Image 1: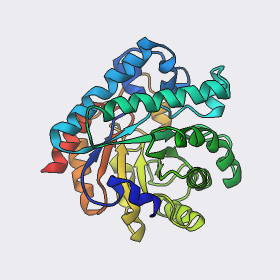
Image 2 (image 1 turned 90 degrees about the horizontal axis):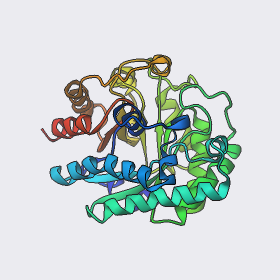
Image 3 (image 1 turned 90 degrees about the vertical axis):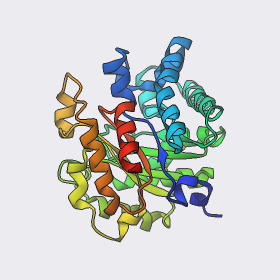
Image 4 (image 1 turned 30 degrees about the vertical axis):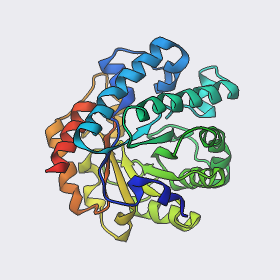
Length: 307
């Protein structure tokens, strides 16, 4: 059995929802302090864990209401060795945080029987403009730490979010394959539809597939507004894209980095743009949001998709 055949969202066209921009919601809506954008740090105590539990609540409720599955992405985008070290945590601490995150997602599965638990893996460097680019081998070694923990939990898969260059995505994919877990790869793009590395989205997907024997179960696009990439959706590779977590804002990555206020955009406009992409991305069925989005955006997206 291929890894992708173990994931219901990767073998059919049933709708699956996921969450929105967890870090921007927790910071701007809930007023929480997230050093280094690290939501996993909230798992340090019960108050923080309760805040995360409350964050996921409306999403899983929405999925049940609209008859969709739910991909429960753990709040571990920053729970890799480099970022944990900067926060003063060792590898044992990191292992515990990733396990606690999966346990929290198991609570969601107790409430909705169509929940896929996804261990979220983030980039080793900056998610917009990495200062250091890892080789495929170095990326595999780095991400094997977090992926190895997920493989020893109830996680059904791993998802690498906001990948900025192909070599790191290849490393994550190989780490997941070695650990026996399905993997999804989500690339981010600049306003010109290209990765921060300069590679086109299509080139990056073809590159990873060629280097891994098409091992990823599917690909996603995240942390970009649809207007940034819709013109780039051309070629056989679009059949490999099943997930979309777009930003609410049309701002560039540089502008978002410098922003001091949240740009929540227009949920209805964003939802209409998702629906319009159905013809360009024929396999698209995993829908959520990224920076600036919350459960209102995902509800609007689900509504537009259903109609």
